[in-house]
Length: 113
Image (tube, rainbow, N blue to C red; front, top):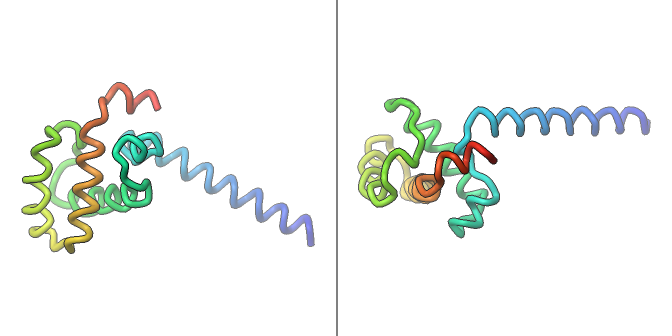
């Protein structure tokens, strides 16, 4: 029974590692612990905002890096777009928190992480 448990644990770990590595290289603006610390927003909330941003915003807009738009403009953009997308107030806040935090990251710094 122990070999089966060990095999399962090793397989699970390799799948988690593979998924994590792919996510980080595919999206250089995925939330990180450093971004959470810098923005004072829990990484779980940044992750939820990022997921909503990616899922909802990319339906109508080309993928854009949040720092291509000045931070102060996101507070004007997100409410109207959230209404158009049918997001709840909670989802709107999560997206706003994510894009505001991500918009303050310099591209060069993010690429090197």
